[in-house]
Structures are given as C-alpha cells and as structure tokens.
Length: 174
Image 1: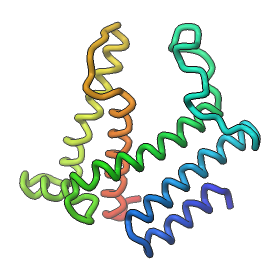
Image 2: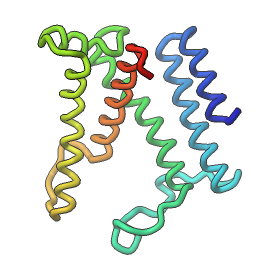
Image 3: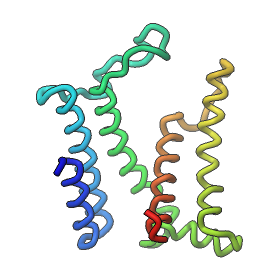
C-alpha cells in the first residue's frame, strides 16, 4: 500500500468519527505528507525545498518557459493543499451557516427552483470566467489591476471543484 493510499484510508476512517475541524487538520497533515513524499521520491530524503527558496518563473529566460522541477512542483502542491484548507475554513463557515457543507447551494437551489448542480455551475463560473479572462489578457498582452491574484482565483476554483465532488459523492456517483 502506498503512502498516499495509507493516508487516504486513515482520513476516511477518521472522517466518520471526528468532527470537521479535526478532520481538516488531519487532511492538512496528510497533504503535507503527500507533498513530502513527492519531494522525497523525486529529490531524495534531504531535499525539502520551500517555494520561496526556488527560482521564480521571472528568473527564467522569458518568465514563461524553462524547467519546472518535480521538487518545485511538490513544494507548490504541498503549500497549495495547506492554503486550500485555510481557504475552506475561512470562507466555508461564512457561506454554509451550518454544519452542512452544501447548505448555501441547497438554499439557493430552493429559492431559485434550480437543480443543485446548476447552482454550483453558476457559482463556479464566476471563478472560472475570471481565470479565462486572465488567460485571454495574457495572450493579448493586456495588463490590468485585479482585486485578487490569479492564484487566489485558482484556489477558489479548486475548492468549488471539491464542492462539486461532494455533491456527486452525496448522489453516489463517485
């Protein structure tokens, strides 16, 4: 059994017996372990790079092309998993208003007489559209002031994808 499978199995068994906050802490620890395992697999046991210690894309020849190492990706992946957990904690409580992770989607679906997945699509499209606009701007050389970084928009979209996964899981479709 791989380290990732072992961690996933442990999370599944813990999720049934502990509250959401404790489960999230375990998930964050698991994400760190997965990131560390990737770094160790590709870089060896002594390599523990931090994203801030690695060369930035701007340090490469044109800022868009070059070499993106497995170590750098593993560090980015690990940091991103932690940040997604923090984002979920910070924003989730505000939107849910209850212990039901999908409560705001259910309320909106009921108010608007729409299917749950349609409501998800409306919410998620805001983030996906912003990412698409960023890509179009990059392609066309347009620079504009943004209220949030593209990284935050990507994180929001990832959280929404996990919420979609929760909806599908609830329906028994995973």
